[in-house]
Image (cartoon, rainbow, N blue to C red; front, side):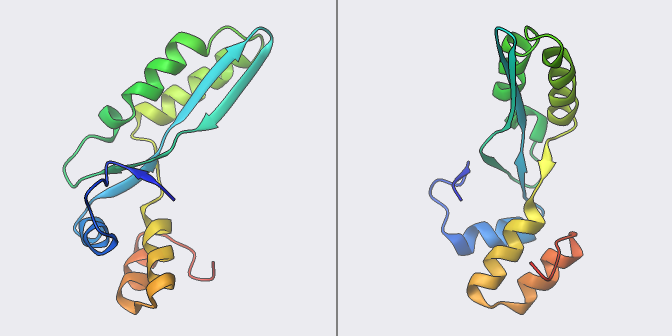
Length: 123
């Protein structure tokens, strides 16, 4: 999985940044074309500890504001849902990323950290 904002970081450096409080988040965007409306997740974004997830999701939020409303009836509904998700900091998938890194490396400490953040240990 490609994570925006991690350019120049090795997987080990990213793991350490996540353990120290960084997050990986997904945002939603909504686009309406005529009577068709699409709601999709964005790419994953890395938010360093102390960083603003809402700021990282600003481009998807602006896209939704401009292009989401126009489809009837789902455009306004999906737009509001996407705005609520984005403005509340997106969907935090850090636990899933840590869990997948832990499985790939077989690191029990990272697996424990992922479970502590809410990941399903059986996935």
